[in-house]
Length: 102
Image 1 (cartoon, rainbow, N blue to C red):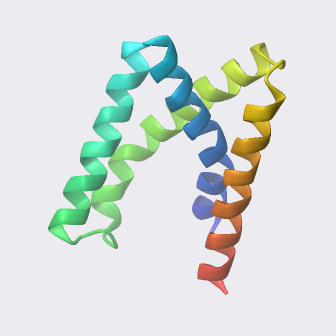
Image 2: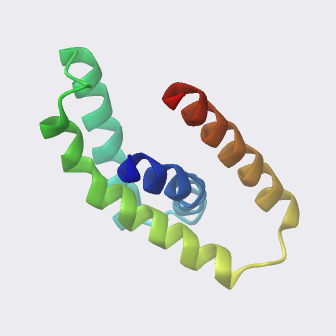
């Protein structure tokens, strides 16, 4: 539904924000990213990925990192190659989810 579409649009900025935080050593954003990675691993290991109770905990952090990535991308417009790569990643994620839905 609408939640999947919002997450698809945030994924581009989420990955950009996570990589930007890693390159700039922004430990506040990296701690959120580590939490999301550990949450994803624990949900995968426990085989409860279809249960929304466990997945919903990470959504505010995904939104936070996505907003950080958006603000960083708006402040630096000179790196067009990186923007193109992330746009391609976003297209792949978008079409993957489109094929999953249909």
